[in-house]
Image (spheres, rainbow over the protein chains, first blue to last red):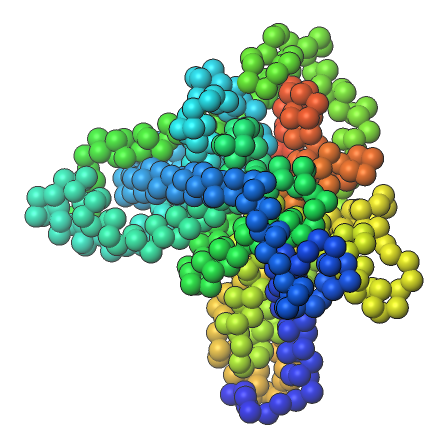
Length: 286
Length: 295
């Protein structure tokens, strides 16, 4: 076994390199956050100093809240991502159960279609989806709800195939004896699904939900097609818009970036085990 | 016995229809429609085509003569090589190092992974500040190290480097986690046997860890290549509209530029078809290069 108490020069070098990479991921964020508390004209001379004493100011944050509807964007983004995760779980769960347990003519072909659907990049579908939804009268309207719906629908579709593949794999691994027992007790297929399969599949549902949520929350491409006016903006759209307009107010830009990044970091600290699992399970997603 | 429950197939269709309909309406149909769109004349996003081009494939002819398409394809291929070598390469080194240390494995996993959780849009704005000409972090560090002139990181020539570094940086942790998981799956007995035979740490890495990791590395490589084709948010935020002088377009950002900025919607559709074709070809090539081997 390795002797862990022995500290060799090689080991010190290894730790040093690892710490250097860790610094590249952590320090930029710290740098931005500390500069978000300094006046615009003080950043130049003191960008590495901590914002203490007379350097400290909250003016950037006040201006950020005045310039952009940050809370409104948070509300829109959270609503969209939550609905996307919810619908992905609802639809993918049932579909995956059918594909995992039922063998019928064409079930293999349907599974291949699902796997194939993972490969479609958003670039290749977004124009036609916009046309279609515009034709239905749900895209590019004044209604908040319809606008949200118009972006939720394609995002659900974009995550559905991947979610089904993950869930089919998981449900196939469940022991069928429990379903047999439920069947003997007189449960029909729907009762078996909701009373046996759903509780057992919870961990996999969590993985899929986290992945869909984060993917939708961080997306700029699809959302920029469907969310056009400031009151509809998601967080990514608000960020993109504010940088186009006020990109040279570096203090405020730092404040806006900090306002967007810090909540995510806090959530990540608490849920990192599940998030890492969810994101890497998504490794195969297209 | 198991077959008995599921002999009645009717419920299967009830379970499948919603998800399947969703995919047909929002993925398969738009995908096919997009190919048609690329042959049509479309004036405005959202409006239907007003008829076919003459000749119907004229968008594809235009693509060959469009200098920006060549720039975008070239940049995208460079981006693929950078992500392949940079992301997967750095991730392999980091994963092998973390696999060999005693304390702090969990800490490094958490810290290396976290840029992936943050939206590329926010990261793009953050890197805008870091690479800023006169107040940015990089230029201040270089100045402190004694460099005389400031570097304009967004100038022509160096802009591509400025764009690709953050994209590469963000996803190293992703491949790192996949590779560490692969390393954990290698049985301890192999390491034990090698140690009894007197192998050094480096020999163990070279002759056990790396060969057994081959298939995981192959998976990561395919993901890095197909991922590079999908990069959009970060380049668009840092270098909107292919700034400077349309030299930083990628296939994805150029498709967006044509569709949304110049309202050349049908041409955007044709570019989307190009992205799909490139994706299929390039992932085949990578698969062929890294085809699975038995050890």
